[in-house]
Image 1 (cartoon, helix red, strand yellow):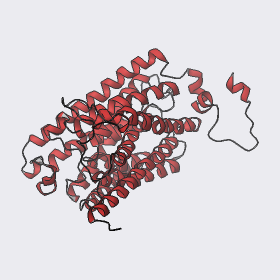
Image 2 (cartoon, helix red, strand yellow):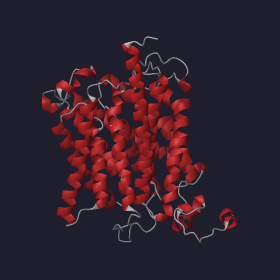
Image 3 (cartoon, helix red, strand yellow):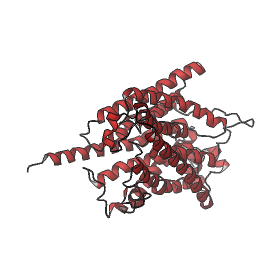
Image 4 (cartoon, helix red, strand yellow):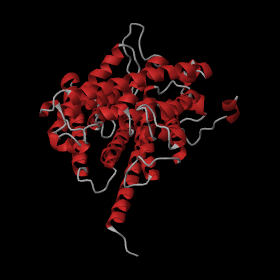
Length: 431
């Protein structure tokens, strides 16, 4: 049987997208290890369980109706109306890959969004409340604002907003949602002294957190380069290079800055600095030069440090730095496209304009700022409303006793680490 060049191309594109989707899904392992390493031992299992909630609930909800709201046909510019359970008219999605393959890739993205929020509420959120919020985020919050930016007919898409792999659509949304959640649920017991100063809560396992960061870094190549949705796109190499450079610049900046400021390189800051660089380059990885990628990563790494200190100064407890990494860096990366997008690299977008520093004027920067502000307000306000309503159904925060003993035993009935001679009274856990 003869196989046409078109069929070969479609087959390669399908393999590429499925593999990169798997890389993005592997990032959930990175989130799990990173967050488990940053929190105390008594809450490590609760982190893993929330990641499982992200995956299993997120995938099913996005399949049933989230994908339709985000990528379905739309006459208003506000929301999709076709494609529930991948059925109905999706003819407007014109790609070389199947709709099933496209859904799989986008499903990996939606799981990443909710995982951003999980770290900000670590060690004190009720597991049942978290399940309900996951349904809201994956079924409504992310699909709606994502449609505005990426959906065919979305109003920000029509204005010409550029967000290649999601600095705004994923990271800024998740970051500002995480900020709202952290403020709503309040700080961990003992995090702040009576005078308002922040007490240090030492991470339980920094090597574990480091491995988590490396897995996230690896998966980010699928996150960014996979967004080409084509194995034959010549931009893949450039995207991978800008991704690597920005992450390296973010980590390097934090090493040098913390050595200068504290006389010692701060491991958690360095870990988050590399991640901040990755977040910052995600919007413009295909549209900026290598030099701009280094600058974006460095600025995001430095901004992450100041944002972390700013939140602690206002008694906002974010155990893993979700807002500083994703909210702040996602915002800077989104705006950076309006400054650094080059004419040569943006000519294929169909927008016809480019960054301010390359003679493109203020239009793109204005659109980027409008899109960012919209997503930030949407993520923060809707999350606050969601938690307020959820709190009427089931208490959002665990009890004081559960928090003190740890969520692993208090909520899930099992510790993360035990000795061979340890025995657990099952009846006492169930009573």
